[in-house]
Length: 318
Image 1 (tube, rainbow, N blue to C red):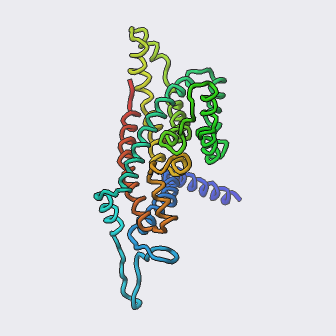
Image 2: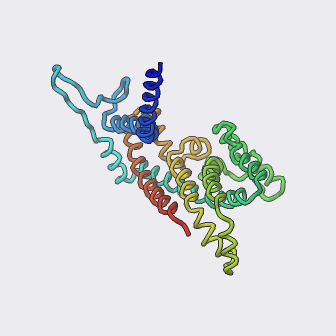
Image 3: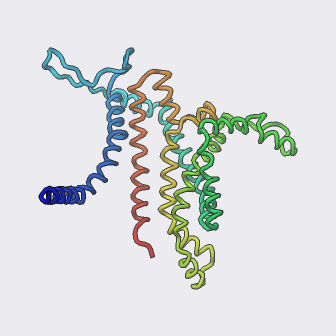
């Protein structure tokens, strides 16, 4: 009996040592497995399709390889889709380049608008009392409790010619006829800023709420004016939150499809809409995959830039 207990304790000790030694690797491996399953493998599939030819059938593209006579392995790599994009970009009818530039332009200015609007809101929430802070945070995330599609549809009812905004302005006598807001780039900006503003506020709040108030008092004691204190203390310490918020807004907005489709007009060409057209209207999956791959390459540079800035901003502070 005693020997069994000793063996049991030894086995438990071996298991504990194994967990201590391998626990870190196990914890790190979980996100790596997740990334491989839901990021790396889908990306490889998209790149594979981008190197195929479009055909009529299921799937609507040629195979990456084929085996002939049971022993000859033939690899089919077709780069014509990328040459097509390059040729289209150098021509006057450069719809893809225009879509890329429009997407980057709208994503950039939407991010700036979210930052300008979201920073004061996050600052006010962070400086509020605990009870009030919880209520304000709930109001920020409250829109997430309803469907994203329904919220964008609600803006259609507000921005069209007979919507609430035009009705109020006509009733006040500010305008004599309805303002055409729907099917414009303005409506797309409204929808994007509304939908993505919480993604800017929450990381900013998480950073601002940790700001040590003694730093502000020290700056005031040293004679710094409030505006100087803001830019030298508050803004500087909130830089990681600003970078995280900009990344959370800028990157998904580039590939946004629903908002430009519902609120934008024919001139609001974004890459998400082009991808939809190629995949489902033209049934040209290889070209659509090439467009998506190029878009990913375009996004990588802002991601690397923001990540490097985030790492440097998260370093030791005064």
